[in-house]
Image (cartoon, rainbow, N blue to C red; front, side, top):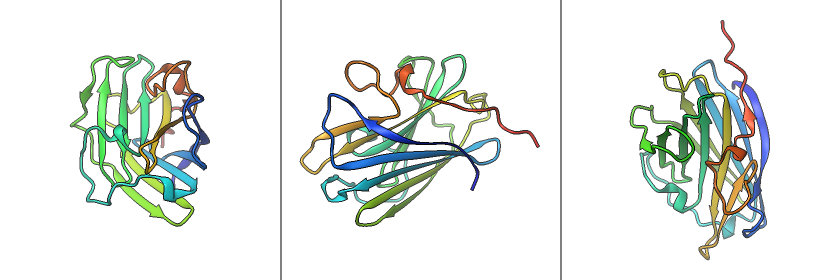
Length: 184
């Protein structure tokens, strides 16, 4: 469903732990105003700390445990951060620029989140509606994940990492450039 815009592997942060898994993502455009994000983990899922499944609800602080993130930026530097938990919890925040002016994006629609889990494969699929206030003209995207293991160890996965500590907001992470939406 939708036009695939990018299909990439996430890489663990170079100075962090490297669990025996692989993490990938696929980004698709579904019409002019929505995106489909698919995050897949393959490997030893038994070592990952999984929150209990729940009804989808807005929840802050998801990045403190296993979660998946998407950052959607405009050309002027404003961006929206989405967080998706394996429990189906989610959150969204607006920024005026790099880590500037963080505010909950209460005006965004609740994303549709679907979970598939087997012995060696986990998939989280999220459908998000782009807001009508101009961020719909997304220019670049950063996709990432925080993976917490059952012993509390965390690894940080992204398309690219800046030097130093993990920082998914950094411009280095925005490696996907989106084409303009197709007009009918």
